[in-house]
Image (tube, rainbow, N blue to C red):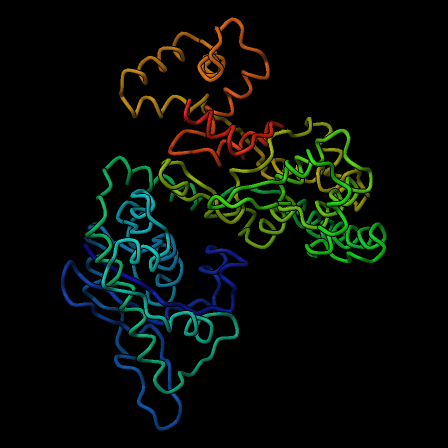
Length: 491
């Protein structure tokens, strides 16, 4: 196994513009690389001719070519391990190949210690993984400052005294921590690595988007936010001038809510009751028919000013390369469930209540022409799927009750086998679950009880407990207190 870690610099903001734009930009370069073969000592290579202040010695090995041993290993087809290997893979494919003529490893050669960490139920971050595993190694704490000063846009071109050695130590420490962590984690199976590599291919191909529509929507969303903040100030008599002013918001809004509506906002964190007005909880309030008119206006203005859905247009506009947004899926990103998750554009949580083709086409034309539309935050959120487009058409599919089927299959117990039989028979699993929860015959389960059965099925899998049940119930307009939720979990 070859373990590698790069430190790079660029005038492109990696977080803002994404990995693909970062990697293909001519200003992107490799500062240094730390690497180790199996259990051998960690070796080091300077990728750039970094000088230091006058009178100080330059970094070691500044003028060395790319290590021949690594070049030969890349060509051998043997596995290459990195933490968050998608980054190292992108740098090899688009930077080292350009700056040093290096033949990058094939996709199937890459192994990722972060993927292993997630599959083992640990955190994705390397330092958090080291802490979770109780390793004696830690990432160099100087790393954050070094990255800010020598890697980010506007970076320094000259090392301050001592920082060349600090950078070297930081890069080497990442390889030491990664290698130690890999030895502690469960090795992934061939099938798991095949799935990981398929995900890498999907990320490399990217999602095709309508660039003109995204750019028009980006300008439009800024106007929507500015207008929403103006209306907030007018509605509250100047007590709120921005949607982010939480204290002023709560002082103005809460007196207008009923006790039931306030209960909708309750969440429990580590057993302590708190009040939340995040996107989901604002939606719970907006679904209340008896909500105060002014309160409703306030919530709609807040949604318009800071809609997370609208921000996806900005991500697409800022991160696309030649009409495609790359690196949007994270293998095993949903922790112990084994499911993929989204990153950057977050394609997994795009709304499904889309407009018809004719409605969407008409609304997109309005956005391109700058025409004002009704309920802009909601309308634009429902147009997000139309942002993903291709001349040959775009197709979506989903598995039917995939978690409900996989969980009992994995359990392989007698009760699990019985549950799978219900799926095979076409029985309504939510009715069957509700029957047990409420101790009533299947034929007598009410619509509301079935809804609770559905909530329990969706929330209490993979270790979910009463807090998960409370939160999921709210999504379906059901309010449970902690005592009720614990009762249903025990049942």
